[in-house]
Image 1 (tube, helix red, strand yellow):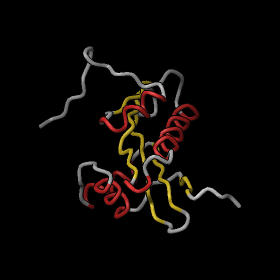
Image 2 (tube, rainbow, N blue to C red):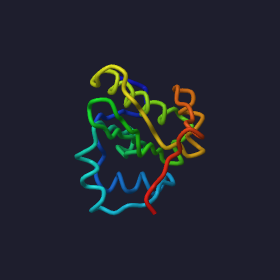
Image 3 (spheres, one colour):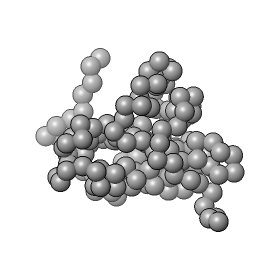
Length: 138
């Protein structure tokens, strides 16, 4: 029996857990209609559950074409569980999935908010600006 208080689950959390993780961790809020297809159409998805409470406390997913382009999104950890390596655990699992399942030389991107940048840098991500910047339709 493991003493690890957390369990990584290689699937998406439920809709309500997904919405709660997004909102409570500071990501933009979404609704159930938006969340439902996210949970079934992501290329890879995992979440972390606290064993004692069976609550989802962290998550992340990868969008991708399965060929060369992969975008990591929704990296979220509940505030009370931050600083315990859960974001790294999620990111490592997602990157391992790409390494194991995708063809050689994938192009992997993410949008890095300030709190996550040290983690992403430690995993080998580099800033692309000024050569390219993230943009969104307003």
